[in-house]
Length: 428
Image (cartoon, rainbow, N blue to C red; front, side):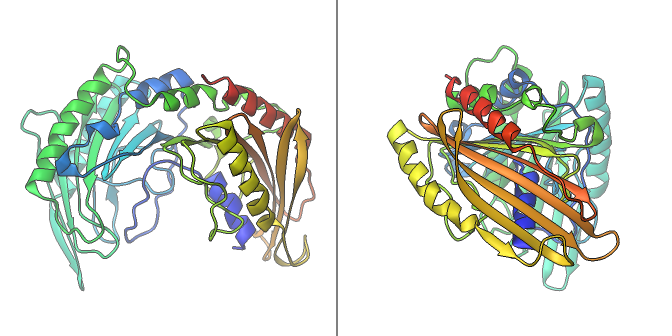
């Protein structure tokens, strides 16, 4: 896979939630859940884990990463327990929306199903699977994995403890139970090198689980808990209704992935042009929305990916824009002959006016020809604009089988970027 194609895949498969570095292949997740409305997404994440919930026993937390992904966990859902090289134990993915919130070493996940009845069925299956599978000891050479599980004393769910001596996978402990239409998981994972969680950490996780399940049950009447910037972003990010027909995307009913994420304070977005450099300075928040991905380097129909980076002032945003003007030039690359055998690509950048706003674009063409069944073309067009105290970027990408010459409606992408920037500036 060449670097440009890999970079497109990174954007296409953008997700929230943690990726688990464990042996075995990633799970090919599927879900046909509809995209949640901004109101429902905000209501759910507002009821989830916040940095102020973290006690001393579970470490310290100052930042927050929250959002959702359909299917839950994306390419690699985090399990409650697993055996080396074998199936991982986690809730049913089909029809579920996977919300997550991470602060410090603690993550809360909620698998939300179409109804309370569907959630009850998923929980019954998961409860049996945990009881049957998550008590074991497995040794493979120097690797040792031990799983333990049991019922919580108040009957609200189960606990699962994973002791590990794997180099890159520290021990973790989870509590899990059913609440209304969702399965709620609270997980503490130690830092690198931790082989077993302590009794104090486990007790603190149990107590936090009680707080978070009660909060989710009260989510429709709950006051503002999460940072106001997160709620504002959830209202302002692009929604399926904003996407014009000239930019077709794969739909959830056809297995499309959808994700939304918020990081407060902000974290520089991945620099797909040169991973050794930050694309932008860190800001007060980084917010993303992905619509139409299939989690693969071949982008069926098409996808739209939005990034919004907020700063503490318009002056700070202009300084970040100066940095972007410099770093984006690393995207100017060329390899091989397009539409010829092998992996060949062209990437060019430039400036553009977007409805009176200063803009920068990245145009990408990637042709892959490695014989029958392995010939396809991917095109992507990304536009960034400076608007007030923020930088907003929108990408549209699509793939076609064969050495097909096709075009992306770049004018429509610029118009969509203008729409995104206007919505973002009105977020309040």
